[in-house]
Image 1: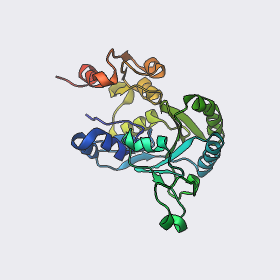
Image 2: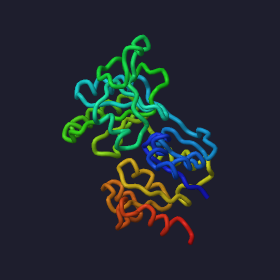
Image 3: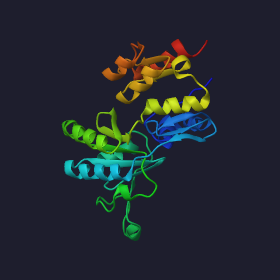
Length: 254
């Protein structure tokens, strides 16, 4: 009855990633975006939304300064940072997200642009609030040391940590996840998750969704957490069309 994407990307980022032919079709179907923190029905109405507390954002920014990793905050289709770096720019250049904007103080806007590398403001001071934070670094060993501290911070501020890409950790509001967002959207659509939902995934952030679905399918190159949560594991990986084959096998009648 329904087909919808469930992604960590912003809605605009998902559209850009799918290209000019398929991308615009997202505006005609429901969707779970930003790790389940922004969910819309087929008419574009928001059926579920959640944001981090400003205290959690500020604490994360302090931890980022200590470890010297990069940070990006999501407010819907608007992405913000306080310092442009190569890994921050990769969000748009490699992963198809909208360009990340440099958050600057209003009285300094005329004297700065998005190429400025100095931190001018705090994401926690942004009045719109942040759905999630990305904590990013190309040094995977540094991120491995950083994660336990981020997990501790999350437990103190009613937040949670997940990961979809090796170079990025994600800080979300407590109790939220892609799987939780899928449940909220299915409630709005009248879909029984445990009886009617076919879910496809490959990453840590997909595990809850795969476990809850009537049929959870992991592609061949999925991470161990996704494979453990799935009912079925495809031989084919994502690049070999594993998701499409799974939909043919389990989801769509000939």
